[in-house]
Image (cartoon, rainbow, N blue to C red; front, side, top):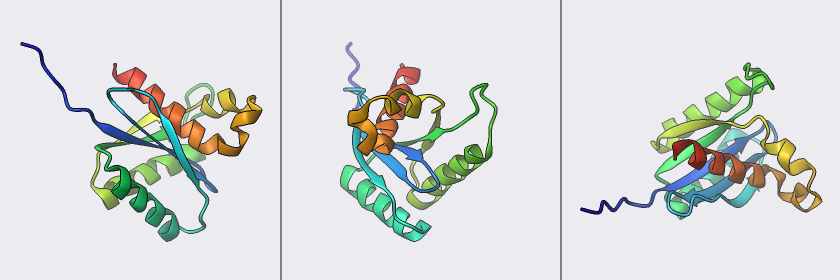
Length: 135
């Protein structure tokens, strides 16, 4: 018997102190689509924008990029990204997974066409890495 699985929508975040890149995709196409970069000041304004995106896209799963040193050791932003993911889970009651994002920005920085959307493009790469790891 052929098993048909439900397509899950996944929203990914590239967390930064000043900006948060957001992308969306699904488990069928397994590709990340950059949505936007959130650059609001203050957690309330940021989480309001995230809430609007979650209401619009209705994701089943959230993914947060986890920054680390090149050797994989955690640093200050690692803890902040973890805290952000835990806040997403607490506020929106959606499961959160983390993906090693060590080289996502480096891959994009050399491409001048991507500079304007670097954060949301990074979120799309984080999402595609998540799909790759789950396959």
